[in-house]
Image (tube, rainbow, N blue to C red; front, side):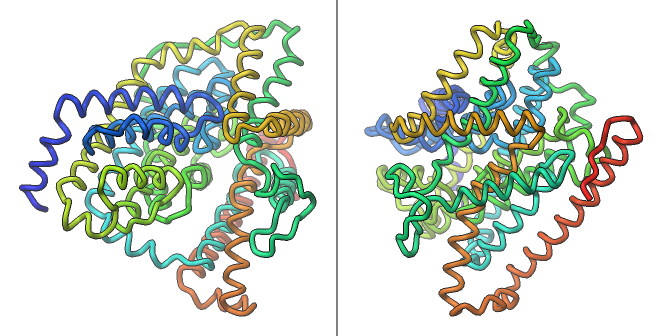
Length: 504
């Protein structure tokens, strides 16, 4: 480690102006991330013009603060209104919203905050010491590895299917089916429709908003005459000692899974969160509690998406290869400041690299401060009269759906998916498998077809690639473990009179 460069980096970061911009960025990120449809990518892109004329560290401090703030902000909407504020918070809905309905909104938010910060700090430390080594390993991924990685991701569908594996597989198949809508990426053939708004497929964010937010509005309208009101229990702003003990392993697992996933370009925080959630459920002593408001479910998802955000910075800084859409925008910000991310950054601008590492660490601390200050306020939102809350959720949701492409078609699409989500929930079909299929379906299809072109249709060659074989074995192991785990859960529920569902 170059002591001179490190000393210079410390001076750059701990300049008062830099610290102020980090905190402002974290505050903006939390607010923006909590609004359905406004993703971290969009918030970073919107703030880049404000960095013109600023020096590199204050500029990156503000943008990184927004980046990590949005990771936590997404969980606020997921927990309070059953709507992921960002795609990365999609897995947080599974247990966060049931905790909120149980009157534990404050507890769920504080657990999400703690897990987010732990995951972010773990990812920052890993990036500081391991980035040159991890980035070289990530370069070994080609179309075959990405296809098998998508298959591995899809293998966790069983874990998030709830009581009935069959229902989970049905909705997952439906999700994979609708990913084929639009123009074929290789032949430009129109599949099912030639509608201009659907040429690139079903827009993900409007579909997400419809499935979770708009469907929840329909549920709220149905129940509004009952006068039901969820009261938030706000007994503290930090997890209790029992919570710390319960979520410790889930946070550690999520942090490691997220950091690893982030180093692979193209693997987003949403995938990392679902994989981490599945692993936490598989290794839990009480897997039957997942999906009903388990703190470990919230912790595993939030620690993974935050760690993945840090991990995605590794290939961007080390190789000049963005890990995801967020780091692609951040890379543009670096270039606008006159710095080209890549191996030469470690030679020519080592002090800047160290400064970025320190800034990432401090950004997570800033998120913790902002989140800690706002937990009580956020939790009170759920206590608002439903006659006021439901229209507000609907307006925010539809504005978020419109904001992505500024297209009214996306608004109607969100409403349509809202109806689908409402009907599926009515008949106890899980929604998360559809979401996972929408994320991983295009990734699996595109990379499989690329690989088939490379090997001239010899699909069996995929078994000659060590990483692909390893991931396939992990996918099979995950499927078997998930099936056995779900059978154990159903037996426990049946023994307790919980009405377990027979999946055979």
